[in-house]
Length: 88
Image (cartoon, rainbow, N blue to C red; front, side, top):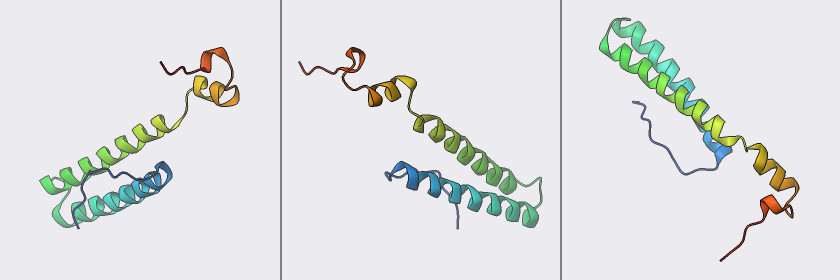
């Protein structure tokens, strides 16, 4: 089964679990492809490129998941002046 890099609109936790599974699948497929076709084949290079792209996307998602200190402050102090939101 070929792996693709599409994203889905699922909750963040489910996305994280799904991404880990996709990375594991891609890793297994890359190892299998390289074992069958040789480590210098184009298919092997493509398989490892997919693994690298999935790892980069996973790292990017982890960075986006962490709230900033300001967001944490506003969650804990919703009435603070800095956190007020006005509808105009």
